[in-house]
Length: 338
Ligand code: FAD
Image 1 (cartoon, helix red, strand yellow):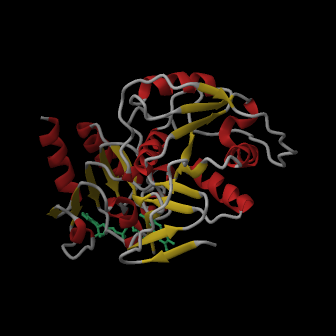
Image 2 (tube, protein in one colour; image 1 turned 60 degrees about the horizontal axis):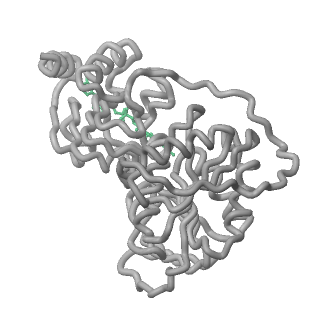
């Protein structure tokens, strides 16, 4: 498939990228606000060093293009391609893939970059399969335009992948790339080509979003995460919510806490949940199972509260408080609120 995976030093090949450019697929909400994860995808694309073309699709895309121009630093994006068609709303991969394929037919595109979000994870494999290219998923570091680092084995090892394919299809972990810098620019906007879309075979029914005034877990600077040690939903709400409030933090949880019904499953952090890298992570009654660590071990400062001093979370913690969470958390919250 043209992808060589190795752990260790890589042989870098010089390549002629002067004519290359990168197509970045961006997601935006209904009001046209570009997703944080897409802004991270743009900053990852910037590291590739090629001219960047941003693709916005959906009936919000004209507004999203306007907002993008006000959000992103000057000269980052050379051109915005707008596919203003409601068929692309909600980014059903069955609809968006033909558009991406049509654009990627252009020889100039050496790279296609998406955020490793639910949408990106849905889109990239389909694009890869139809182009017969191997996507490189969950990239956490760009070494050079052909060499990428990505976690494997639930984050226990990092693979350095060198891609020799003509086109590199890459999804990037938003937590590994800061959202691109603020500023404004005035790149030309271009209408996307009309693409014939056959019968989709699927239809968007509805979405059920949990509304919260809290920062988004995926991009919050501070996260308080609760585990099974909290024992029940009442204690989770009674201890975790005030502690998170005192820090203006997002709330997260382990899978055990989610499975036990302490909180929404959208709050799950880990291998099968969200991958986060906040400035501060506080784990309360969290043992630090490998699958949970896969989602938070890149946090800048890790604080663990656990009554078992042998709990694995202490191996990654910068600060550990050994004791009963029922005593420590209220005291900590009181002090922080002061
Ligand atoms: P436990 O491991 O039960 O830990 C509870 C901790 O609370 C203990 O360390 C205990 O000492 C402490 N404690 C108890 N009482 C107190 C007290 N009074 N005061 C202080 N501390 C106390 N897990 C995830 O989190 N995210 C994932 O994405 C995920 N994906 C998985 C995927 C697969 C394929 C599998 C097999 C598992 C996955 N898991 C995931 C589950 C994971 O293996 C662990 O079971 C889970 O993370 C444990 O959650 P926990 O730390 O809340 O619970």
